[in-house]
Amino acid sequence: MARNGGVAWMRTTEKIDGYDLSTSDTEEVHVLAVDDSLVDRKVIERLLRISSCKVTAVDSGRRALQYLGLDEEIQKKETNGFDPFFYCDFQGLKVDLIITDYCMPGMTGYELLKKVKESSAFREIPVVIMSSENVIARIDRCLEEGAEDFIVKPVKLSDVKRIIDYTTTELREGELREGARAKRRGINKRKQREGDDDLSSSPPSTLSSSTSSSPSSSIQSATAPSSPSTLDSPTRRLKMTSSE
Amino acid sequence: MDFVNQLQRKFIDYSSSLHREGIVDDQFTQLRKLEDENSPHFVMEVASLFFEDCEKLINNMAIALEQKQGVDFKQIDECIHQLKGSSSSIGALRVKNACIAFRSFSDGQNREGCLRCLQQLSHEYSLLKNKLQTLFRLEKQIVAAGGSIPRVH
Image (cartoon, rainbow over all chains, first blue to last red; front, side, top):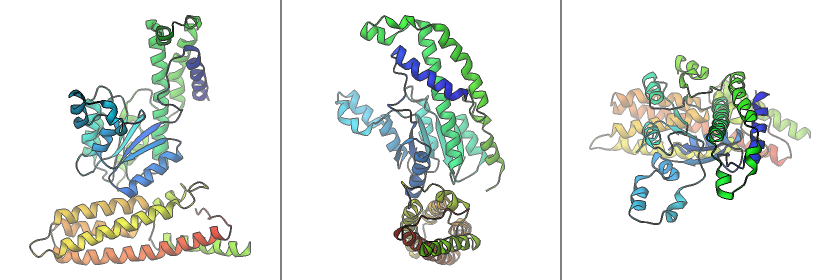
């Protein structure tokens, strides 16, 4: 499959360029799951693990923000000169995807979505909303605010697989684009850090040919949009039109 | 080996009856599919979390409905919402439907109606718990006898 071939090529490039292009330490997508229901957290955790993801599950929007390092209280303390490393327990691995319940006490999933999209550091993280209510107005509001997708509960394995598939595709394509952009700028992080001269020997044509092939690989994978056009998901359309 | 087969047969039949009677729905089957050698009792584990959740919420609603000074229907509604959510996630169909019926009485702030619904809900919960515990006992017996849990559907 073209997509797998693209991934293999990308890994080789990582070695040649010495860029730290990986979003986390392994190939796995790291998902932050947010749900106040213990039963639902257990289910979503299992669904994600079976889909080969790393999962961090928290029970509130507030804890999700703390994990990301976006919690206002912590930020206040940091600007007052507190040692941020003291609070590093709250924060963890880089998050590739956030999947959150809509109806939660305190901060709703919608409010969490807004806070994430307002943050310059985290607005690129795709956010998926889950809800037991199949309400068009609610779905539209979330999509307008920048949600990547909207799943009607109960969540099934096919829902999770679909989301992980296109998150993985977008991550890879994002990294390829980032690599191509950096190459064109002539920026070489490793060169700056270690004074290594080998990197100019990588032919730029290899990089640009793979960049042009990546849109076709995303077309082959029917469920993976190459840009976050959130309305294209066929499953969401089906869920939107089917009654509860 | 014949003993294990018998147990497995019993398990399959009992499992099918739960679906036929509408005690559980397709979501329960979806959760079964998430079980493997690493997580062979996943459904049992989720179910026991659900039982705890259910008991707590039913209890809270009973207390709320007893309040002489006035019933907090907002709290009742919140409990119903939570219970509907988790019963849906585990595939407990009749409990979920009991919640849906309950909601209309809670919306109407009808205390008598709510009391009847709570009774119905408790009944459905007890039924579910007894039947699932029977199923899980079979599950444990199969594993103890060295067999594997049949994957239904």
